Amino acid sequence: MLHCMKKFGPGRTFKPKYQVNRMNRISSRLSGVVLVTMALLALPFTAVAEDEPDSFLISLNSAEGQVQGMALELATKLAQRDKEVMVLLCGDAGDLALEENIPSALRPRDISPKEMMLEAASLGATVKVCHLYLPNSGFRQYDVDDLVEEVTEANAEDIAEYMLKPRVRTFSY
Image (tube, rainbow, N blue to C red; front, side):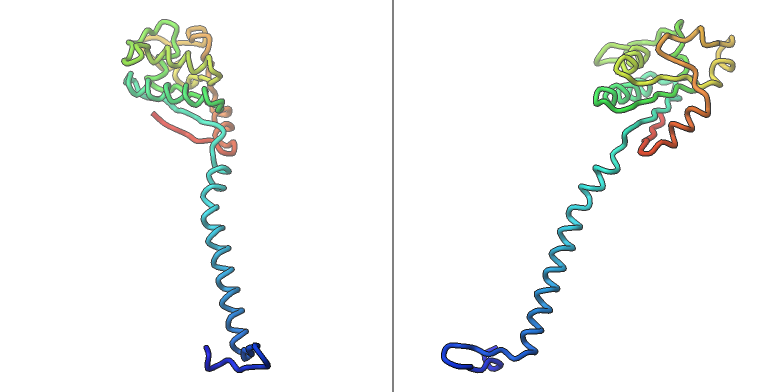
């Protein structure tokens, strides 16, 4: 760099024009790289905040008590966090909605999946039973009078509308 500089008066240094332009280009590239890096580092944090679901649809189909318990425990935890939760009981899981059904308790809390379902409902979760379950299950046909008070009958139109809402996450058990 010293060979490019010329003395210009007492104590002053003269830089050729090409060297000044080169330094400006390097400086502007470095600034651009820093800005892009900062934007990329901030991107995951803004995307997470915007993409966080507001609503959850938990479709429960399993007859297995542990699977039912996990799904309903998740529904309870989400409802406790003031999230909108809909639990859809289909197939064998529809038995939880019946007044006459008394499932076994699960450890460690020693409560049944049915009690977990009622707990989630008490916290604001909506619990619905598939409209196909009632007339097509068990040894007899059921109707809405056979359901516990906290459970209503779902229809496909309502479920489809719920699923199409923005930022709904769906889980199936």
